Image (cartoon, rainbow, N blue to C red; front, side, top):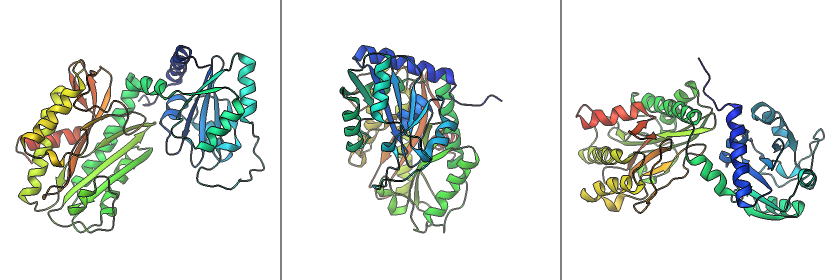
Length: 395
């Protein structure tokens, strides 16, 4: 069976597209920054994902891109990166440690030497930085001092390129969605009454790992009154009969992240709790016809929020019900009721249809979709069947 991943040829295409946009925006080179926490742009252009340390890809107007990392991550970079030219920088060592760490075997280059190398290939008057909002001020100052040229924010280049997905990207997101979906199935079909939230959450995470998750980006978890936390982490609270369960499981596969969540309760749920679940599932059903290429994004948002308004629950609706997905759990677009831009075929998105603070508990529906000309294609078949069975009265 063909392995699901992004091929080297597609990374090469991305670099060429970046160079076209570089020229259009007047950049002579672009540095794409990333680290363990903000890895999405760096993974997109190189497949490298640092652990503990910082990383970057330096892209000139011509020639092969240069991967920048720190000593502990050098072998990881060789293992993961699609680009073989890998250099070490002292400025990229462990992000959480202020000390100067001694790596006696490290063969460092310098930012100044990299700038000189780029100038040997051509002009270097303006450097664009992707991830300028994610790097420390100290690293920015070191780059500014060493490159001795104008520096500009180049984030928009990557945001625009990442917005619409290729067939390979969709395949990775489908696999991430499938894995997350299996995690949800595992916990929803297990009796978790009497467990701690931590132990119950581990059921979903373990199943996701077994199914091939390279990383669990997060597990938002709450039970009973703790569902009101919105983005709470699992605790040692014991799950009680009748508790609403809020589990949002975000799974990463080959750098792509899909999240799923179905609103459910354990044991003998109250009518108030069942009402919250019912409203969320019906609101989702109201919005799905508008997840279609060519339709303004605002129509989906309005359909969901109109359902909440009709149910008299707007005061519990705390944020927009949809966001894009890809190399980050949440990325552009993030539409609201005034977003005129239309969905495009090949976009991928997660619903995030939520209500918080109701007497019966709080929860959300998170389900990944590929946007097509014919409507949405789910990435979460178990969550979708659960919602459809609820609407049909089978739950």
